[in-house]
Amino acid sequence: MSLSHGILGFLSYSSMTGYDLAKLFDSSIKFFWYAGANHIYFELNKLEKKEFVSCEYIVQQDKPNKKLYHITDEGKKEFLRWLASDSEDVSKNKNAFLMKVFFSGSSDIDKSIAMLKRFIDDCNAYINSMNKVPTAIDANRGFVEPLQALYWEFTADYGLRQTKFCIEWAGDCIEKLENFKRGK
Image (cartoon, rainbow, N blue to C red):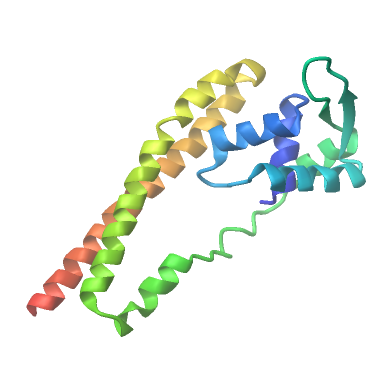
């Protein structure tokens, strides 16, 4: 998935500012697609040049002027083309942490155990941050169809289950390393 398609997806629900998009990315899909505001604004400029989005300048009296982005017909076509295409992301997995685990046989077992324990702590912290996702989905139900919100719930459930799996996996690795140290 590209950031462009995520932006087009959100704009297919409603016109938004870059700030609105950044808030939505942060409150709903950051667990599988992080995008900072600067990335979003950069991508919006590219989408505007491709004529996938249009921009309306809104003059405000007591606040800075803002840009409201709308998806164009060409943008809708591109978004729907992308939705219908096969996903190439599944087999192109890059994970620096797993690369470290793979080569940790060259390191001290206790250091590897400590690394895996930090990983578990990070996963638990991530699960705590994901507790906000259902609230964000509920808060944004008003501008999407119930079926669309259901798909949002699917992705949140995937993220939660995947993270729980990672905790279980790391715990199993720690147990095997501790058994190895004891000569079992």
